[in-house]
Length: 93
Image 1 (cartoon, rainbow, N blue to C red):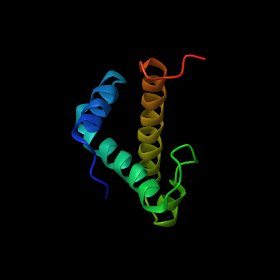
Image 2 (cartoon, one colour; image 1 turned 90 degrees about the horizontal axis):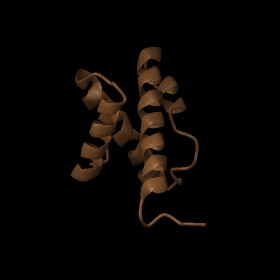
Image 3 (spheres, helix red, strand yellow; image 1 turned 120 degrees about the horizontal axis):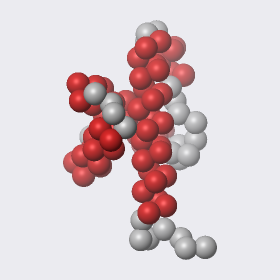
Image 4 (cartoon, rainbow, N blue to C red; image 1 turned 180 degrees about the horizontal axis):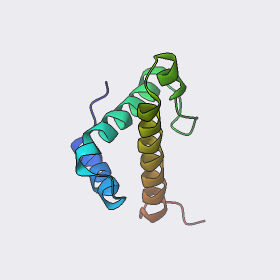
């Protein structure tokens, strides 16, 4: 599984805490984020493509885990989009 830069992991943990994800769940949300980013890193797909969570069903993961993975990835994508909008390097078109 992909190792995340500490800054990105900390940013995500802060963000999911702000979204009222219980602290006991943070490690699982980080795991799903690493899975998501690792999949794209390994197979070379852009992060804008649909999430590879269908693989979890094929691997017989429980529905609650698939839901948690989907929620974690959705939060990560929202965090990324918000960061892109507020970044001083974002296009000002």
